[in-house]
Length: 314
Image (tube, rainbow, N blue to C red; front, side, top):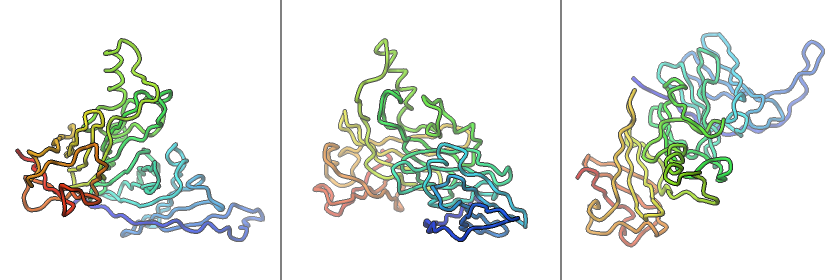
């Protein structure tokens, strides 16, 4: 049985305590905060005071009386993090995923192998959303909007498998950091797109001041433990697309891209044009497997009840 445990962990007040003296010498004061307790396992965050995010912090894993301290600031993602937002313990109890800064523009993950006593992978991304069991994480790749340091600025959607070996999640990356992770779904990754454009142009793929041509108009929504859906808008073609990606073990995800047009709408209406500033706040299913429902954040003329049914099976 695959299971996971998520705990919200609000930031604790970082108030310096009295000096700590051991063997006649002062040692740095720390604060501790329990993140998770499950059976014989307890996970505690240990942070120095006064603290600065996760710098100098470690995860204290206590299992059956054995204590292991695991440094959390050994990666770019760990050093940049402000706080831990949630904790996911994966099936088998060997790995734990720390979700960092979920409310920030660039959030992150630290994947900790409790048996090895180490952070084995890290990722920085936009809007990291976990599958129900915490194994898969959908996200939008985080990139600096400067073509001088990142080729061909474009939107990249990916899914990270926290139960897989770190090597299975690594992608070719134009910079040595934690952004290029996970399996790219629906759109090509930046390097592949850049390479294709360079061949087409007979030179560089870089376009000064270029902005992404794709925009996500919904959150990532897990319809099941392996199916994630979202709505994408192609700003150049003014097309809207419902994307449903199904992740698989040892094989690329299958991707269903449904163009949002009148023929796909259950009601007799034209889907709102992409040029209008509508947003989808939720995607749901009912007992009919041939359709999904898109729930609009605010009313639109075509959907007085703020939702439209979409046929995903022709």
